[in-house]
Each structure stands twice: as C-alpha cells, then as structure tokens.
Image (cartoon, rainbow, N blue to C red; front, top):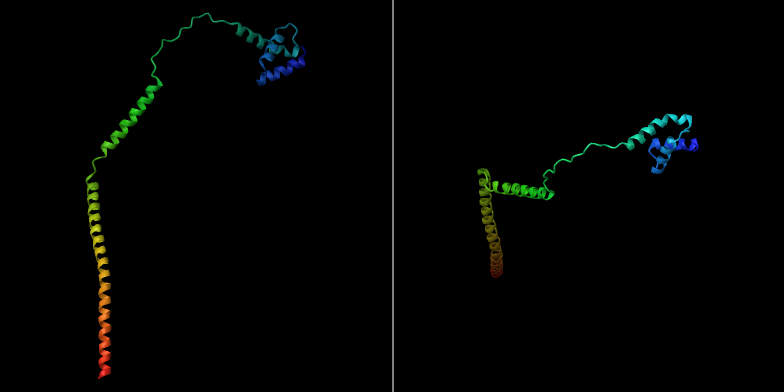
Length: 157
C-alpha cells in the first residue's frame, strides 16, 4: 500500500474521522512486515490494540442480588397523597380566625348595616322631594291668584 494513503488515513484516524473499514485497513497495514520507516513508530500502538482485542477475561462475573425497587407508580401515588394532606391541613387549620379578624368582620357587618339604613333614608327623602314639587305647583297657583286679586283690587280702587 502506498505510504501517502496511509499517512492520510493516520491523520483522519487521530482526528477521529475514519470509518470502521479504514481502521481495519490501518490494522492490516501495520501487521505487515514491510512498513514505511517513518510510520514504524505507530506499529507498537497498533500491535497493542490488536493484543488488547484478543484478551479474554477468565474471571467469573457475578451479578449483585436483585434488590427491591419501588415502582414509579408508587412515586406518583405518594406525591398525590402528600399534596392532598398538605392542602387539607392548610384548609382546616385556617378555619378559625384570630380575634382581630373576627372584630374586623363584625365592624364590616355593622358598617354595611349603617350604609343600608342611610341608603334607605336617602331613597325616602328623594321620594319626598317629588311630593314637594306638587306642593310647589299648588302654592305657585295660589300666589298667582293672590297677585291677580291684589292687582284687581288696585285697579278697582
């Protein structure tokens, strides 16, 4: 094989850009007896890779005993229960109001009652104003009659 091609393959190999076929080609090249002198420094590296690939472990591998695992479904059940307990405790613990809050609510109720009474009084007063207009019409008619009578009396005298 031409050393220029091997040089390019080595450059790609060290950059991590070679395919599996190109790496096999490099291994085959360095297994040969006639390697270019300037590439001889890479032979031990490829020999070590080949030896490491041939190694087989003879020790027994034992897997750890199966441990008990909690299924993910139980995590969601536990989360829902936690949220329910939290919401329930917040709702039931805040039912009793402090003394200040009770006094404030009582004052608010009294204020509403007073405002309602004032509103009713104003509405009654507004309806009475309509009756005053009728009264004003009647009195203005009387005033006109009195003025007419006075002017008639002046003329007749």
